[in-house]
Each structure stands twice: as structure tokens, then as C-alpha cells.
Length: 415
Image (cartoon, rainbow, N blue to C red; front, side, top):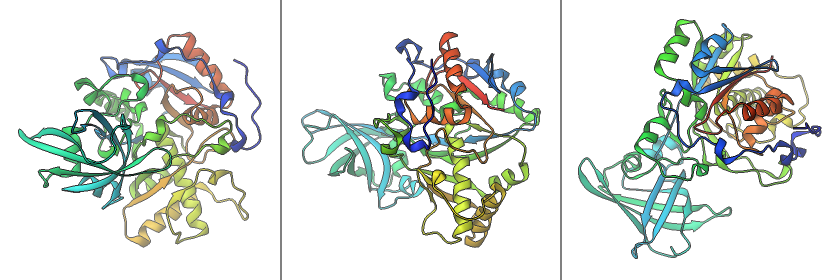
């Protein structure tokens, strides 16, 4: 593949310059029986070697800190029916009422409102659709009624259910399906209930798995600890926007989706004491969370009491006057903010777009699967590797690697 020149400023990047041909038979339809048996492409300062994922401990810098995203995928697809029998699919994206905070929304009983994608809903004009399910061996029913359709095709859906004492999280567990990536073209199975979660998933809220972590096993995590490889956890609840293709010609016309992040004060302290040794992100969601910490902290340095803790899409690329803010200063500002507010956890949201032209503040390496052509995830990889990303993907295609969510992995160390 030829490498096009990178325009000045990520907003002017043409997404077609990040295209490659991905044959359908290279997309992994199922996970391997053994998580750690996936192949591992290692790119170290431009030199590529082929390994197996269980070789990872020996490939990492010995003083590395691995950061995992411990989000847990919720069974966010609900297959309801109209009174006439026609099927309607509801894909729950984010809570709207009575709570917008995800953890509170999942504990809501009796009724709630969520923003959803609606499938096969053309004939659903008015009135509720319903879904019968079983909870603890007893019959239960969920009703859904469309309140409004918003720009972009998403709908506000009012849910109510019986028994009313059930939290909405239990309704989803009992009645919902895992939201597998649409390119798999199949419904979820009992095996997916295990394999489309990481072994360290802890906090419900994602509608897509942080797939780089699917290769880890308890045994592999234990070996990493025995070798003295440090680790930490962040939480970014992966949204449906991760599946959205870039339809605009240039990135200036592409809107990034917002995703909630939660980071403990203990992790911020760990990052501070670990510097300047390397930080390796397990997955693009962990990387975006880590890099978002810098921009959240930098904003606090400039404005100690901001109206909201959020990272805008183009924030890293805006010209700011004054002295540059160091990573240490940004992390310390976050800790000071938490101390002032009496909180042990930073809760924020990010729309951060990482594309060629971005300068990394916290992350020196990435463990990740192989991503779709013309995607924001591929832009992130290109930002980390520079033009070498094409050599990595050429090698993976030429050497039989499996692609996308259930596919093989890579360790990217730009050097």
C-alpha cells in the first residue's frame, strides 16, 4: 500500500486515505476455544515479529504498567413484539430518565426512559410493544413505548415492567441479548455470554466489549503479576458509536460519540509514581481514557472549577496560550480536584478523537485487535505508529491473522 501525505491538522484528514481491503473471510466469526491461543503481532520500533498471545509477558518492557478497561457488557438488545406479532428490536444506548448516571439507571425499578436504536420499527406507529421473559422461575413482562425520535434516528423509549421491584439491570440480564458487532451477522449464543466479556469485567455499562482484553486468561494475568508487570484499571463504558463508520470525507465533518469514564484516585496516584516508565494501554478504550485524563487535568489547571468534566473532540488540537502543562501537573490537578470534592473516583465523559497529528501524553504502547478500514480506531493506531501502521496491516493480511472483535491481537510499541 502507498502512504499518502498527512495534511496539517487532523480535521483535514481524508478517511479514504485510511482504507485497506479486508476480505470477508478474514473477519473472525467466533472466538478461539482458548483465549490466549490467539496470534500476537508484535511491532517494536517498526520491526514485526509473529507470536502467540500467551507469549505476551516476555514481549512487554519489564518496567511496563498495563492499564485494563474493566467495563462489563450489558445485554442491551431487547427483542420485543407488537400486538400483531411483528418483531421490534430495541438497542439500549444510554439512560435519560429518571437518572442519566448509568449505575443509578441500572438500579431503577418499575419504569425508566432510555435512548435507543430501533430496528424493524417502521410499522410500530403508536402504543407499546412487549417482551415476556422469566425471572427466578416466575413470569415477567417488559413494555416499551416510543416517546420521540431524535435527529440521527435514535428514539426515546419509555420502559415499564412487572414485577416492578426488579432493577432494570436484572430486566436486561433476564430478557436481553448481548449486542454483538453487526458485522458478525448472527445472534448471540450461550458461548458469547462468556467469551464476549473479559475475565476481569467488573462494572456493567458497555454495549460493546473492550475486545483487546478478550485474549487474557486468569493464568496469563497471574504470570504477568509474577513477572512484576504492574497493572491498573480504568472504566470506559463502550458505546454503540464504536461501530459507527466515518461517513464524512474529512474528519472535520465527523462527530465523535461521548462515552462515560470512571477513574479511581488510586490509579491517578499509580500513574504519577510510575512515570517516566512505560504505560501500555490494553485496548483503544483504555488508551482514550488515559489520554483523556491529561486533557481533563490540563483544563483543571486553567480553570479549577469547570462547569463539567468532559473532553471535547478537538480539544488537543486547539491553540492555547501560556506555558505548556506537563502530564504530572495534569494528573496532580485531578487529584487535587478529587480531594477538594471529597471523592475517590473521577467521573467524566470524553469525545476525544486521536488521529495522526496527536501527541501522546501518558501512553507509550498499545495492545489491540485489528480494526475496520476507515474507522476512528484505525486513525488511533495510525496516530501511534505513524506510517508504519500500513506495514503492520499488510503483514497481518499476508500472514493469515484474524481480524476485528473475535480476531487476533497486536502489541504496538512505536519506540
